[in-house]
Image (cartoon, rainbow, N blue to C red; front, top):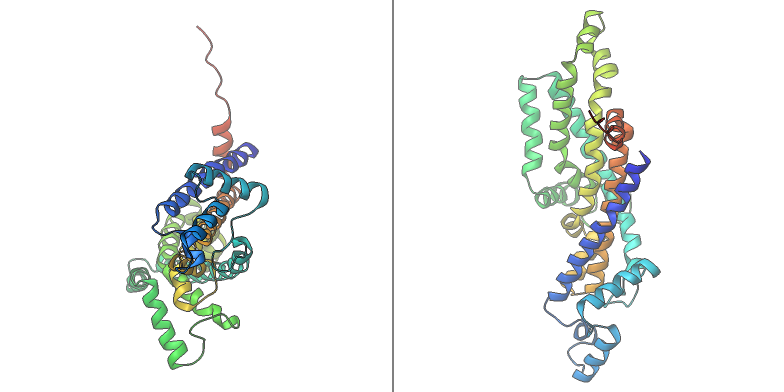
Length: 321
């Protein structure tokens, strides 16, 4: 088990290096001079070249990349924003907390709705209830998130005045972004829960429990549901990473001061250090989440631990005849 965890941690290094190299290369080939962007169009060519030399932009791309990675590893320095001059890390960390709250809330909303619908669908399989649940879940999956966001703003902010349309001035500001992102994952949770419940309900121990005269409610909630939640729990862990990476559009629509909106604004401003630092920090968070999820899979399902241990064991050498 320990070897598996160490191996997964070591695999993070080439992944992060690959992501950072791709992002850095895209920044390099993007049109526009960062020095000109900082100084403005009124600066002379001599001033621009002097700033380029100061920032190291005249060095080869490989040298710039190695220096950037070295600063991250040794100093935790992701560069400074062209717009404010502040360290990118200090600007992103508060926003990362906001994005994290929205992500956790969205996953919770999607999981609760999806699990409930999946259980109902499995218990009422091949009935009109099952068909209705399928239609509802597919509807949420098919409609783009920004359309759902606009509808929610129109209903709850403009017409009913219950919730704010944009910004995070109070806890109410988190509700609409959470619901918008959460509804998009309802279909996935519903399908996984339904298929897992149907598989478990067909097991021998479930038939044995029925033969002993146990009630359906007791069978469902004490026997079937516990085992059916293993793949659902794994899906929840995976959705955490997907929701963080996919919340840029929603944060922009709702004006949420999160990492996604920060990167989008930086792209429009050609603020390359902020774009590079924000994307790399998100990549680091995603890889760490995936690592935690992979390890939690083993803890949730003992069968995986047995497989890993068996896979890591050395096969005995065949004796010579």
